[in-house]
Length: 62
Image (cartoon, rainbow, N blue to C red; front, side, top):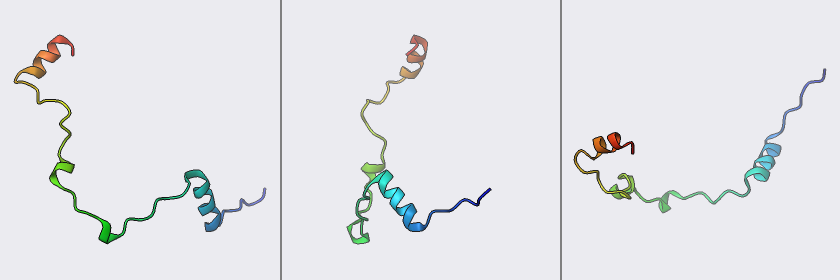
């Protein structure tokens, strides 16, 4: 049995490029911005449930 050859770093880089394409440019540290509280808060796409709504939903099967 012959020993398996390993790819070089350049060959691995080529295979990554073929599979994933061109990477976007890196974000420079001076271009970064701090997160605001609104970005970390949970989404508000549904209203807060009414008092007892959870229990009513469970009984109704919803």
